[in-house]
Length: 631
Image (cartoon, rainbow, N blue to C red):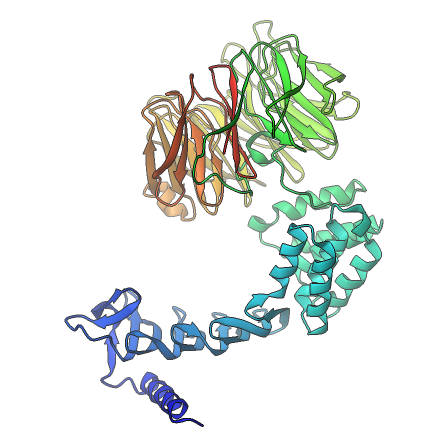
């Protein structure tokens, strides 16, 4: 052993002893400062060597870490609030080096694995709170093989992804078993869909982990791909029962598919409905537009484009107030087809299984072939259509206005293939109270409808029977948005009282309501525990919704971006940015973390259309009669 290695070992041992002896080398974290990640003791210019102890506001130790010349070198421990060990590792030049362990609050091991110079190497084992082994991952040359395989699939290198997973399985990775089973069960590549292989891999892991919800989810998808729908329903039901309510959304959606005798197929993200998905969260999982180069193309529809576009297979679909529905190539901006309805477009389109659905103020819902624009069917209602449609399990859901001929506002469910009415729900909305269904969201086995009659309704997707209704303190004008077992929407009189409500998606019981700074004028978007919405006073707001008590006290506004003009363009959220329009004619890109403007683009009219983001391009309409594609 070299002298240098002996010295490093000796230093590490000294630091380990110091952690337990709590001698004079300790310094309180509050008495340190950081410059370029180098730790100094206050009042001294020399980088610190010794043990840095971090404490919380109550004086409890939360971390003990050894430093040498101002950087992490030696053992480190973190602690839970109850004093039990949270993690332990050894640092070398600020990098994890050696065995790293993490623990549950009950003291049991949570995960463990080996790092070399900050890079994972070999197996990383995870454990449940009861001590039972959970998933086992595998790292090689600092890269997770699971991630490497998924990236290969993402880039359509399917054979490479399969090889990586099989290699990881040979090395003992159960996560790879689950990942490969999920691929064979849910891929949209027909030549790789293989129910038998999916069941084999999923079953092999579940032999030792019968109560693991994600792996039960995989097994259910495998059974469905193999045509064993009874077994798929049983496995998925068990997975749902094991999950907390805030994690059940996607599982319930797949369960509904299996009950309908359909397999789940994972497809590339495409914004085929208003606000990105049927839950109306407004979150777009796609490449962003960080720096604005300019317009990729501008299409002149010669009529106001107020509603939001949708995209599918290289085509953007939208409507204008002249009654036309358009299909435009996203690369060239060339018109592919247009279709004339009998009235002004009153909804954003939605696409499913090769058909585009769109509502009109001529009291019809239209179904058009998305490739040709030819009419497949149209459904006549008693009054104007007032909400964008949502399609789930072969059914189109939408809402209408009440009118002067005493027709109430209704929620409709129509067969997506035939246009035949399946059910209709009558709200309490009337023309006298300007009643109308403003928004529709679908999640699992429930349809949610916001209505100007002061109510949010929850209905069964199959038959339209009411499960519950929630009465707000004024008209329910925007929303609903469904996320993690909660429905968000706005309600109030627009003057003295305006609230954002959060109600339990299953029971309709109020969780909290937030007193808003202005009239809420958009559908709320939600991502990672933050709610985003626009207001009549010209601002976009970001609100932390993770702490219910702070919500009740309205102490959780993270930031406010002021555009200076009415904001009724519902926000589109990506990983780092938010895109929205204003009545001043601008489309804005704003940093999600701090609300600072990244860029803006000026159009010739008010921007009321909610933007759509896909593959590094933002699509939206303007009152100036144009559809814009910015990159």
